[in-house]
Image (tube, rainbow, N blue to C red; front, side, top):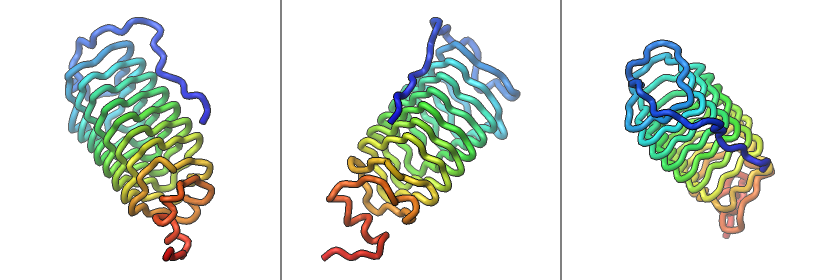
Length: 211
């Protein structure tokens, strides 16, 4: 994996004095720390967060469209049941966050870390992911459909009952992951690395039975 660039903070961040829930139009929010706030129920919502830290923020049930998250850190946040469509995440970290049931569609992720996150039923579709680290994260029953994956690392990730389709895992090491019940097409799994004990979970894809 290429070196991952961390979020860049060149100046101290000020506490955010506004209210996230009050925004209904396109707006840039930058160079602030946002704590203990909630944003929910936004439809076709376009917003830009540039150089922000989110602590214990709840952003759920929103439809983000063409939104941007640049140089952002999310700590202990709930980002569940959101849709991110044609959106961009660059140099972002998510630590101990929930993304249950969220959809990331036609979006671009680069230099993104998800560490100790819960992404059950998370859906990546028709997106481009480059230099992304998934670490100690739960992707149980998550879906990866028609994505471009480049320089991706899955480290101790629960991929139980997850689905990969038209999302090539070539040169990606899955040996530390739970692949129980994984569903994956041959084109996607070809060229990936698995451990010996995972072989049984994958062999059925090749029509091979193990006695």
